[in-house]
Length: 279
Image 1 (cartoon, rainbow, N blue to C red):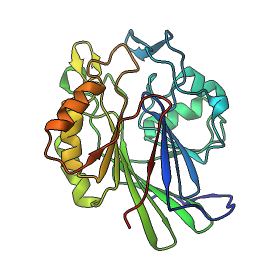
Image 2 (image 1 turned 180 degrees about the vertical axis):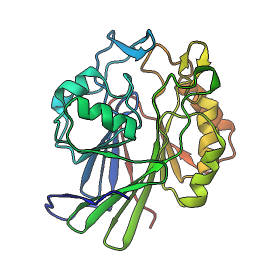
Image 3 (image 1 turned 90 degrees about the vertical axis):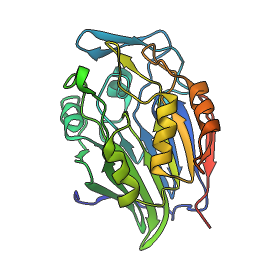
């Protein structure tokens, strides 16, 4: 576990209700327990192109719900991996370079080259605690597999994450973010090590590069929810770029046929899901 990250405390955070504001792709604003957290920031406009490496590009198809200037002050960023469709040129140019970013070692190294001075690198199962007074959130890196054998080594290392919110010794809410991943055996370790997940944000889209699927399709995303076994799930990362082949309708169809007890909440860009901890 890295050294605790202590932020200036204002008034005690509100643990009665939280929210997820869906900006687009894997970019969301999470507000809970006094913390304001941004995930995987991408703010390119619709029609712009992003470089994915190795001569590959993708066109943004959907306008993000807001721009960086519209965001409230951020406590920190959780970045699944440093790739053009998850941390784009707009983010690199306009985000405050002093904002803490929790991510992979690979991503933190690239962020440092871009002038971001407060990167916190995690390996799988390692944690970073962020505190504001007595309120805290512990971010733990979860296993993720983004590069199947046909494109092995062509994509950046990635991570999922679990965010545990609480005050003092009292735990309040457990949030899982899949990151860009495919179904793989290590997903089964997550509910064993981190049971009782309240909400899962799952990356879908069926991203296809060089004819190879590198993120979960809608059906696979629902299967991941069955494995992780959260109380509720919010699919994201499903239609923003031209390389996506599996949209929100695929997720809805798979969820309707699934035996999972998780309640699915579907967000369009600019919509907000409000959540409450288990009573």
